[in-house]
Amino acid sequence: MKHDLRAKNLTLGYSEIDIVRDLDVAIPDGRITVIVGANACGKSTLLRGLARLLRPRTGQVILDGKSVHDLRSIDVAKVLGLLPQSPVAPDGITVGDLVGRGRYPHQGWFRQWSAEDDRAVAGALEATGTADLVDRNIAELSGGQRQRVWVAMALAQDTDLLLLDEPTTFLDINHQVELLDLLTDLNRESGKTIIIVLHDLNLACRYADHIIAMKQGTILAEGPPVEVIDSAVVTEVFGLACEVVPDPISGTPMIVPRGRHHAAREQVAAVS
Image 1 (tube, rainbow, N blue to C red):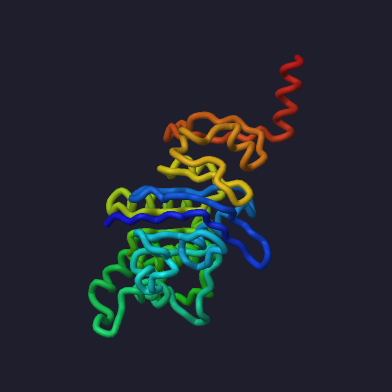
Image 2: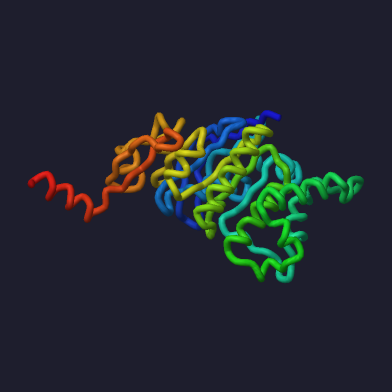
């Protein structure tokens, strides 16, 4: 199902500080969008605003033609799923129970737990490689295991839009790639619109259809990675001297940092 998620003249912040300022953005439907930028540039704040967790100071977030703050929470939750940056599980909860909570938006007075819910939970556990943990207490798991369980809960919600804030945190490189492959499969097979905040710019370029590069609460560049990511943009966004070359696997931009020591070595070689 097609959905239109966008922000107009959006300003978001905490206390007296504006983090995102007068921002306009339209999320491509049915694609994978990755938001990148330096620490404290507003990536997570923008995601929280899009997910209706943070009320705008000015402007609005619009979902299918209506302000998300004019919609009922239950109606938003049926369309838009969110994995926040630092989720907290209730004490004593098991993996199965936590993932099952992803099905709550689909419950109601006249629709209780069903075989469809069982299938959704089982599928989410299987997809994230956490089925063997179903009876374990969340507190007993490693950071990487917990992160995969939280992803499973978000998948069990089975929404058309899925927002994930740094979902690869605590995951080793193998599980990072597995998770991003899984999200790509979901996007390609079901047409889910997926929005991800990532720190790893090379993974962002490899998996994104659309990339949003932020700096100090504004969008510096956006579009297909091959069109918008170059050394000048990386230097502007991250303050990083680098070369951008084609990824030998995907052909997407790959960032190669120069670093002070290697840059000095290049200068010595040039003089020689």
